[in-house]
Image 1 (cartoon, helix red, strand yellow):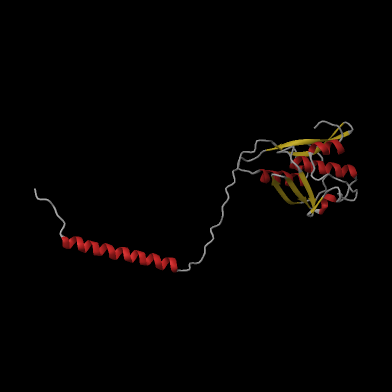
Image 2: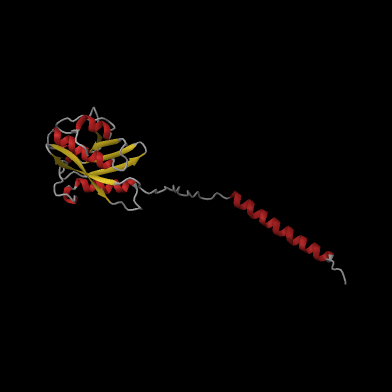
Length: 205
């Protein structure tokens, strides 16, 4: 069997071709690096995990128990795809529309009709709700207390221990900014336990 040998002329020719291709590629690389290309900013996409909402969502109406007024929770179904913010926005909107959504004919509300939800945000530091000016109008101190209770308990139904911040027309209610004509002074932030202790009758709910 004859051994195969590369002809020197072929080797030389292939070497020249290889050098020519390498030189061309290096030249293209130098030309590319020397160009000033327009910068294209890639949008930053943050992936947020939508964990299932474990706690039940409730809207809080009012009802009479003897001579007292009590908060009456009404469960609201949550879609598996909803975030806590979405679910609470739905619940708060229904609350402000009044007990037409309640399954109990005895359900009442202290929130003035026409009150609108301007903003609702859920953060790790608390839940923030901003309502329209109608919320602060009309009614005496008892009405003020129970309308705040309805909003507070509905907003914190997914997290009863959460801090709650209430604003009216962008102005956060606090010890220095009272609510309404009755001048109801509220802690900032509000919490269920302290609010119930300071303002609500000792009726179980």
